[in-house]
Image (cartoon, rainbow, N blue to C red; front, side):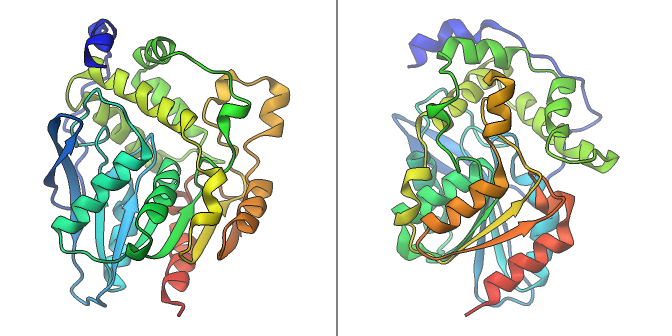
Length: 318
């Protein structure tokens, strides 16, 4: 794959130079994982609680995010007694971004190996957006490790390959090459009913991840991970998740991966989280649905207190 993709690595992506890189809220550690024939560094935060209750929370980020955007959730969970582990998946954030074949199974196994290295035997898993797809795959692959599963506005509640037109890899890379800070910010604005200045930091965090490493190569990685989402649906596997599951869904969300490729009629038909949430609840073996009115794609940023209330209530239930 590396030889095939070398011609795609010739473009330069430019972003404004910030005074400093976005600073993660807690120390970043690294764990080595083998992917295909090479070893890569996986960045993560491991935040203990001074009032430890003996439980561990694993936070899994979305495609256009990294561990940074969990900062306020980490603080709330630590204060509630939880140890919190927050990886940047290989291909994201401060982790290495190799040109490899990406799969949810590979990312889940990398995460399991990280937890093994930390001596963590069981976790409560919280996945947002693409992290929800990964969380589902993790829960299916390692059922004895998952005590509870929380899906915060996950993508993948429908099979995108059934209605989003296929895009060959070179087209996806061309699109990624066009990324600018302004285009990143513009897309992130779609995550909220109303944009606020305090949301700017998360657009900067995404742009910062593009700057971390080889920017041209990162464009290829972003295309490969889009392809992973498109080619590896999880919606057909909900029934195999055995852990108690909380679907925490902002009802204003209309996220579809590949939305720009849809007709106006399709945009009204797909990505409708109020109906997708109800279908998902019925498909899981043991799920509870909480519908957050007036909230869009990122409840833990848009309405943190409400998000934490429902999250902690679910985690504390016997």
